[in-house]
Image (cartoon, rainbow, N blue to C red; front, side, top):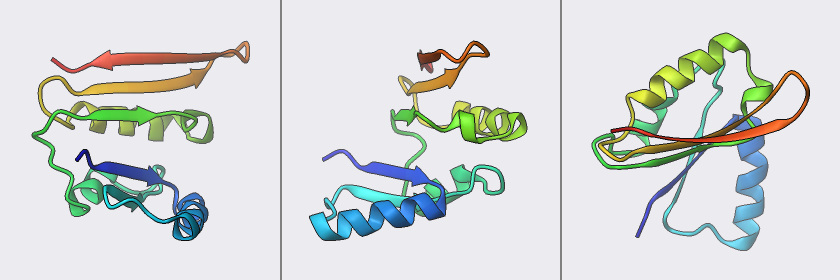
Length: 108
């Protein structure tokens, strides 16, 4: 079974946990409350039993528009250290013209 690490801001994650509590939390979901502006999310992931040597899929959607450039740069740098060979990152961002872009990259 694949482990899913749901990483989100503590306030947002509290709402998600409430919904999951009503619906039932799948055994393979690990919630990791992180403030990307203040926390080292890799430390938090590892504390939740994330194994950085394994191939991973990092899905970072709908987040960048809420963060400062400094936080985005920090998280992107941290993501490059995550996962083993074949790790992939999917993210989106909003262009200055307001259009949304999705990007997928691979770590070799």
